Length: 366
Image (cartoon, rainbow, N blue to C red; front, side, top):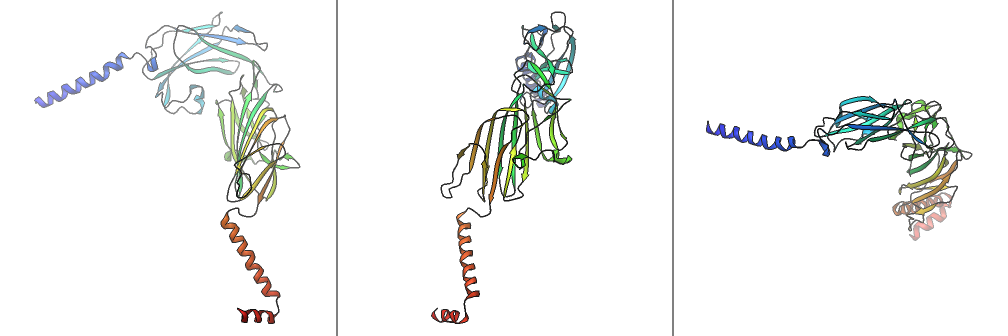
């Protein structure tokens, strides 16, 4: 009986010691359980760049619960929030000064706060923040469908082996205007490395199910990627700045030993960087039609193993590359085997064309 009482007493003491610090911790990640009100200030940026308060905007304050170490960024919530879930939300409207005020949030350990604004069909904000005395400031922008002032940066990685060219393309949008470029209605064709004919990439011939074999990624998650008329198209907003990216990864089968591949972008590429590598089992060559830098040159075989192209690419201007897959092996063992095969073939041919008397004399001498 005494042992049971001591055991229960020790459990109670341990529980009190464990609960005590947790109860004293008034918020997750340094956030207070009960603090001052959360004030959100919404500002509208027009096409000229001037900033004014926006009254009548709908503001959403959200509380998220989960493991901060496993939780993804809140602005990527559409990608699937593994390790975090929505714990509560409040909706408010900005006043004539463009401000919306919420009561002090009841924060529990491990909870996060985010605030977003719904305006003109778009969601602004959504990043994690900590309550403070300063208002949370969110800026909203007007929309346009004009893509003439839009540019991009392209990074193209390629690896060539015996059967295909594995291509990895990252496109970073450069929107230097204080306005959202909306491509939801018109669509934006994404640049891809494709087989080329007469210096032009063959576009518009991808089958309807090709997108299943093309790994795509958006950072942050905005808009949608679709297969339309044989090309990969992005439909959605392009926000101001240079933080929005789209990534495509796929393979191009090598149908001939010598063929051309090319890439073309509908947007001007302020910088295009191509990094190409190839397998050591064969001797493929990728020769661009513009200047490049060679790295990792194989001194034993005098062949380049990596090239880098770095420069600009005007809009709707193809970058052509000649792909030459040499048919012979490049290893020392393959070279010895090839020479031995040629010697045996020469002896066999000599035996076929030589007269019987010469073969008899050769046999007697040996």
